Image (cartoon, rainbow, N blue to C red; front, side):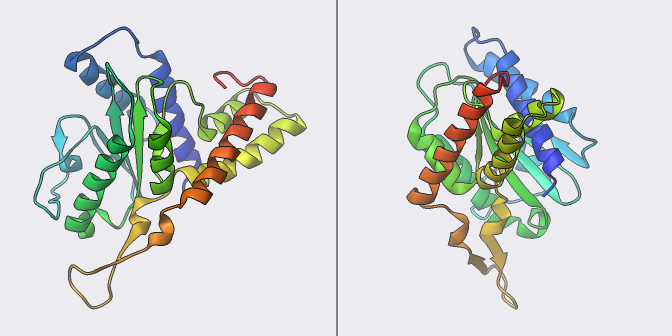
Length: 241
């Protein structure tokens, strides 16, 4: 895992969300949101491959197992890592568990059909909400499947690490927060490709690692750790905590 790159991608997305105008509505504004996120991540690294909104199959010659063509709002790849961005600019309602489930299903279908083309990279999915309306079930489902969920009202541990470094905090509390935030980062954002591994000597047969999916007890522990980190971030004065 490239921790520095993780921090850069997650933090750039979060800053973009907070800077994006909150008063726009409709499909045009949704597309502008997608483009803004894409442009923000493009600045993070010299990507080996990048594909923006309105491109099917991550901009690669991929075919899903079902044959359906999926549009991803952003795909950014290095030699061994890929970030997949799903943007949600909802004018009404909240991000729900169903939104997370659809994202997981699309990625799983794509990975089953194009494992040889993309499975050699560690794939990290992230869903970015333009509004703070994210229901509890969505948060829990994202954590369970290792999908990073970014919303303007909930600081991620990646941002905490970025701000501690940027502001050069040196207190004992900031060091302890950095340690806990680093631990939390590994729990929240996990490589989706760890779910599947090709069976040795067989074609189109995969081993599914259910240990990669967290149960309710583990998810509760992660949410509690996140809340503790947010509390410490507020107490030491981190912006946006």
